[in-house]
Structure formats: structure tokens, C-alpha cells
Image 1 (cartoon, rainbow, N blue to C red):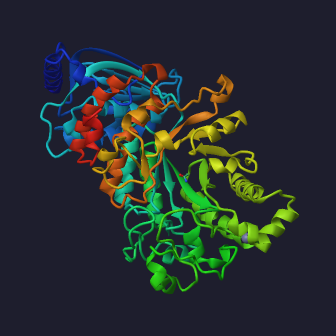
Image 2: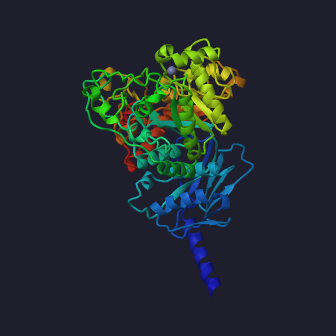
Image 3: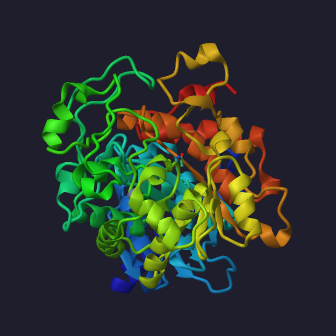
Length: 565
Ligand code: ACM
Ligand code: ZN
């Protein structure tokens, strides 16, 4: 009896799936960003049936669960991921795939197989599968009765190993829920790195247990300038929050499940005003009050009183002279202790140590810094900066970590194992690659998503306030991360590119969404798709489809960047 019942179920399933065998699919069914390396479409569709079985290698539990939850959320299914290889959707590790992040996806009316060299590849196969399903799956508020997926054979892998998005949470703070949403967007775009800018002049945002004042004092400012720098006044409102170490762990775990590496940035030696407000001994001149400009709320003394020191957490934007003292051993003890708490929170190989925009004015007049220059046989303050970075690098290397720094770390001599993030154009990246150092490209003209996203001056006035400049979605799409100036051998040092999101003018999560979408969508194709397959017209068509997905997710993307070329 049981055998007959089983046979009937099988027959029913076959006749059900046969119904989808010959269905013709259209172009519209295959609108994937970033564009895969190879895609062969065919007729027929796979039906996600209520009794669907999702199975795979035991090592793919995380990916299987992710996919199962995605389907259960939108389709009429209540599946669980099972270890094994008999199923309607099968996930597997395939050593014959060359690229560590590569995958193959085969969809027929009978079933789906996603293979990856690693779990990461399988995860990207799942992201592609996601884009083969209707955009409405993203909202998840209505169950799709008959969810079907078009037949296809895709072979795919990324062009670059580093595909990053940065977020400055110091100028403005964003809650854990938004950071997770940001990580989800990174994963949707098959990008793989979240660069988390955690410390600044205007706020220290990560709990360090040994130095509680970093968050008690350093995470709060007592005002923010109004309008564009230098501002039309100051709101004189207390502003500031921080992430506890438990929250950091939770975010890193969430990212790891989505194959996104989190790289923390602990800025030094410049942009260190919040730490100095908390611990003035870190400054060359602990007794000297922070210079109060006319648009800072603390001109009324509020910030200074709250901090109880002559130093304040900055209330305006810019670059400030009060930086970590490079001559005092106490600075290095402090930074090493901070890093000792940061290191265990982040499994990433890299820690970003900043290194940008460090004025040398205080070092020039600081007796301790001058003594350091003399004793170490350094020529000038640029070499002192290099000494600073090299000491930190040595410390982090001894703990098994590597450093990334902004391209200023080239000045005065590059630390031996440092990776360079080229932001002041591409020059720094080219120079570092020629010196055989790894490079991530983040040049302002193409990768700064704090710029306006229109060129026309009149149109700019209709956009929310931005820092300036203009970087349209097509500018981003046209960007080529590997500079022509490099030989084939040197080009290997270009690991990839990243979109930077500095948040001086982005006060809300909606605002951040507006600034990154669709520019990160364009960047995702730049860093994933083979150069010869990139085509703006084709991308622009696919952008219309992915924007339906953004609508379903209720994202506040820049619609005008999609509607007007
Ligand atoms: C930077 O934009 N200051 C790295
Ligand atoms: Zn000093």
C-alpha cells in the first residue's frame, strides 16, 4: 500500500513538473546583476512545489538554511535543509571549479543544482537564483502560489577578489539593524567586504572595555553643524551612540553567514579627535583646548563642560591638527591595547588603520615628536608618520593581522607588508602596485558615493545635500579598476575596488540608501563581470529590473539615476 502511495506521489510530482517542461522563457526572465560570465537559457521552468526537498553537502548547512528560509518566506513551502544528495534543489561542493568564489547553477524543470568550489561560491549561486525569481519575493508579504524559476545553465566567477563597500558610522551613527541591511545589500550584489569606519574626530563608535571614556565621552558630540561646511550654525544637540562588543560580534556573525568579511577601521594617527577628547594625554598638547570655530555648539562651553577636559569631540567637519602624539610611548600603549580588544572581534585578515589626512603642524612644534624624529634618524614629519604606521603594522603583523591604509601611507615610505587603498585618484594605487604592494581602488571620481549623482548644477539642487562633486551611476559603471599604466605582472596587485560612503551629510538610513543605490549596483558589475562583457546599455536595462527588487524591499534608491540616463 505504501509503495503504491509513494508511486502516486511521484507520478503526481512528475506530471506537475512536466506541465512546466516546455514553457518558453523570455529575456525578462534573466536579468541578473552583476552579469554572469556565461549564461545559456532554455525552455522550461522549475516549480517550487509545497513539498520541495532541499539537500546538499553537510558543509553547506549555512547556505542550505539561507536558501530554505528564503523560499519558505515567499513560497508555499515549509522545507528544511537536509544533508544528502537526493532532492529537488541540491547544493554541492565541486573541486573542479577553478575560482574559490566561482559557481555553476543549473535549473531545469526537473530540479536545480548549485555547485561551488567553496561554500562562498554556492552562496553566490543562491544569489543568482534569487534574481531568477520574481522581484515580489523580496517583499515577502504575499506568498507566491506557483513560484517557478526559468531553466538556465550559468557558469560564473568574479573578476576581482576584493569587492567592497565602506560605511562611515562615525559622522553619523547607524543602528545594528541597518548595518545588517547594508550587509544584505552587499551580499545581494555578490560583493564580499564591509569596511566599517568606526572612529573619527566626531565620534568613537566601538566599545573598548579598557578605555570606557572612549564611548562615555568619545561617542558623544554636543552639536552638529547645520547645512554644508562651514555651515550656517550648529544644532547644539547631543548626538552619539556606539556599538557594544556584543553587537559587533553579532554583526560579524551575520556578515560571515553571508560571506561578507568585515574590516574594521581604527583611524590613526589623524582623525583622532574623539579619542583625544576622552583621553587628552594622547595629544601632543593635552592642555591646549580644542579650537572652537564659530559654527560649533561648544562655543557656548557645553561640550567642554560635558567632557570635563579642554578637548571636545568635533562638532564640525574637516581635518584637524590635534592628532595622536607620535613621540609619546603612551600613545602606542593605548593603541596596542585598543587593537588587542579589536583583533578578537574580527576574524578578517586585515585591520584598516586609516593613515589619511594627518596634519603635521602639531608634530612640528611638539618636543616629544621632534625627539622621536632625531632619535630614529628620520628626516621629517612624513617619515614620522611612516614610523607611526610601521610600528602599528609590526604590532598587528605579530598578532597575525595585516594592515590596510589610505594612500597617504605611501608618504615617507610604505610599511613593508601594507595594502594601500587609493582614494586621491589612482596615483597612489599605481605607485603601490609598482612597489609590489596589494591595492584596493577607491578613487574619488568613481567610487565616492557621498558625491551628488547628477552633473547638472540645477539638478543638483533637487538632490539632498551632498559633500560636493558628482559621480553618476554611468561614471561608476565606466570605471576600470586596473590602470593602463601597470604591466600585467603589476596589475596582479590590484585586488579590486570599493565604494566609499562618508556620512557627514547622511543623517538617516534612507539617505544612505539613496546615496548607494544604484551606484553600488554599477560597482558590483565593475568588480565581478569580465571587462569585455561590460556594456552600459545592457546594464541599464537590467538596472530597471533590479529596481523592482529595490521597490519590493522598500529601499529609498535614487530613482532619477535609473529613470534618466
Ligand atoms: C578619505 O576620504 N579621507 C580617505
Ligand atoms: Zn607629539
